[in-house]
Amino acid sequence: MTFTIKRIYVDVFRAPVEKPVIASFGTIPTRGIAMLRIEDSDGVIGWGDMWGNFPTVTTEYRAKLAAFVLPALLLNREVDDVASFYHDLGKSLHVLAVQADEPGPVAAVLAAVDQALWDLKARKAGVPLRRLLNPNASDRVPAYASGLNPGDGPETVVTQRGLGHRNFKLKVGFGDDIDKANVQRIMDGLSPGERFFVDANQRWDLDDAIRAADWLADAGVGWFEEPMVADAPEADWQKLKAAVRLPLAGAENLRGIDTVERAQAWLDYIQPDVGKWGGVTDCYVIAKNAIAAGKTYCPHWLGGGVGQLHSAQLLAAAGGDGLLEMDVNENPLRDRVLAGALAIDDGFVELPTDAGIGATADLSTIEQWRVDETVLD
Image 1 (tube, rainbow, N blue to C red):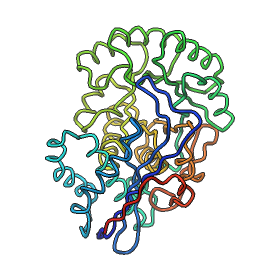
Image 2: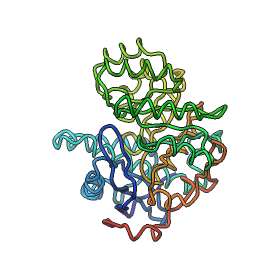
Image 3: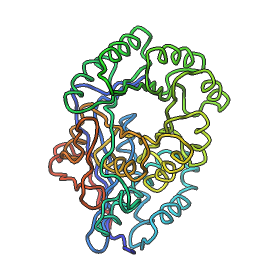
């Protein structure tokens, strides 16, 4: 199936929230999204999300970067093989990424392009994206409530349990008094069959990570996510793996299939981010490789509704025992874009049956929070 790119839309929205997202590396005081829409000559539109939640200024910047670099690369181009097209784009922008010393922003722009092209292709084929990737893909995936803040994590578990979640992840790295109290309260309140994980957001060095892993294992936590900075020396990660008594999770902050595969030596849960690097093309390869290696694929996502839908489609296509990350912090942009397309029920999400990612956002519902709009043709 070949299609021709005729128009590009870059939309930026930013909404205020009452409670910020709090992580050990800093605070996200507002919720922003940078969406990319690609329209073909038949008027079919595919949707993608760029990663850009921290620091907040990066959302607007990456949108501007997309509007600057993409017209010459995309407009009037024919696309047949999306994966090959995506890899060719990466080669075209490699020098820019190196010269500008901005591999991250460039990777996020490319990831959004790849998402949008896969969505467009699936819509033209009239099938859900998961079925385009894998005809035997499931229509139902397990999920977990993510992003639980240190100030009210235990209370949020109770709220989210009432809304249908059965698995939960708390942010840690705020000192033993806060972390241990939150973990113990949540563990004590779990019902049979429920699972609980923690994310340190790269907070500690090797010694502190080992110390934290010890008491977290005693508490019965299901996985320990990003205890150290993602690019810590491999020798440190190997030492950590040898010392801990609970599974390690990560990969959202790694770039490159080879890099992630090396990290499988110490990571048990593999968590690439479809909007940060790799898009659908490379994240799907990572997912299949991880499962083949006996690891568990759990896509990372903490952004808008379009990326959430792509993550769900990827997980369903990949299969395995992984869970869909669902940020439960306040985010009207995400919620209005999703418009109920991924409702949680008893710990599972039923994926929509419509073509592509399964939903088409009504941008009029978030127009009040628009920051910028660029149409390129």
